[in-house]
Image (cartoon, rainbow, N blue to C red):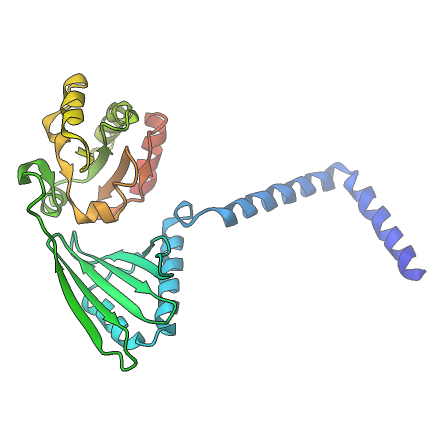
Length: 284
């Protein structure tokens, strides 16, 4: 009985306070804060601040390493390969493995590490000419090493490709805005002028690069129709750009400034102002 009376008194006091303008404002602020917090919590990793996402994934990899059978061997190899620990998580493998990739101190050389349900690990060092694969599957952590040579005989002529060597030479000269396009995605053409103007405004070199799988006839037709410059017809053959996600969508924009890479800007920018804000945020 006493508890019921107390509850009624408290309820009445709360309702009286809510009727005042002061407390209504506080309630509205709380509701807005709650909704924003919930939205941020539900955002995917790439929508969070970049450093926060990277730190989170790094901790995730460290945790998985510590739970594996061959923790020491794998950790030593990560150090030997100069992995930057800017881990990017890949979709879960068909065999249940969790795979993460990270750049190294060398342009065009990346490392993959896969953790499997049976606590075994496989690491792979990828470069333009070969893949070095090391796995630990035995109880005594004896590594199994194999090298996979990449066949370059089927690739187009070198002068029509943009490679990691080209990227290295570019980085030594100037900061750049890279614009990946494809003749099979018509919105690619609409973004050319926007990206080029924003690059010029921010003193960045403008580098349009072609979808490596684009049909040759479609490329020729697009080049004639839209009067595309010859340098925009080089196909992406850079491990660095591929692993950073430049082929996931067309168009996609990537900035490089002082040797550092931005996050991706996938899709067609709404206008120059939106892209300019993205550039300036990265330049801070």
